[in-house]
Length: 86
Image 1 (tube, rainbow, N blue to C red):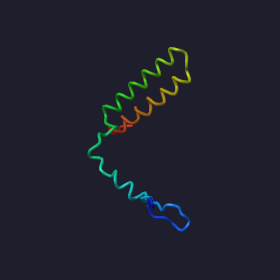
Image 2 (cartoon, rainbow, N blue to C red; image 1 turned 120 degrees about the vertical axis):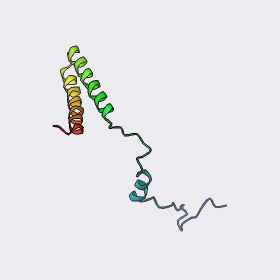
Image 3 (cartoon, one colour; image 1 turned 90 degrees about the vertical axis):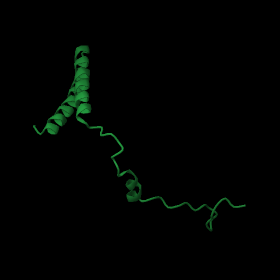
Image 4 (cartoon, one colour; image 1 turned 45 degrees about the vertical axis):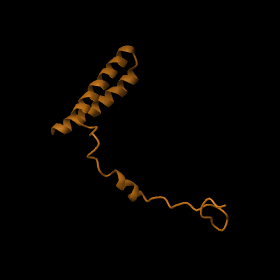
């Protein structure tokens, strides 16, 4: 009784893996997915990281605060570029 095609050495033959191009073709339509970088999400993320930075600074963790300030700055720059200003 055979479970599938066998090679000369007695091992199963596997189907060749789909190429990268064939796999990426499955995800070309972004019309059904929401845009995660909308202006509301950017503004919300900016405010969230700013609040986290302030909380870290109040607790005395200046390294953590700087990390959150850098994240907030990223979203601030993203909002500025969305508006067309720098």
